[in-house]
Image (spheres, one colour):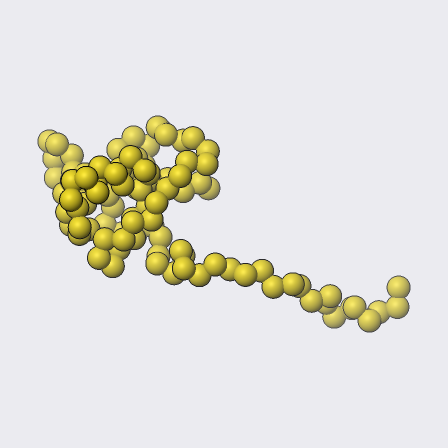
Length: 98
């Protein structure tokens, strides 16, 4: 499943499903948030520096809900640990007569 901007996903779930869309993992405190370039740019130009400020920026105009979920979809380890694919062993039957 393709990852999506956390704001877009909650603001307009059916929109912006372009394959290969560039996302940025932006760190606010200890929380990593996946944002599209547009939402990351809006947050940056608005001077957002904390996760609470980000949630406040992307809050419904007539409600109390934020379009940024409280729970992280990605963990910091997901970005830093790149799985290196080790070569598979030939298996236990490598020496079997063929």
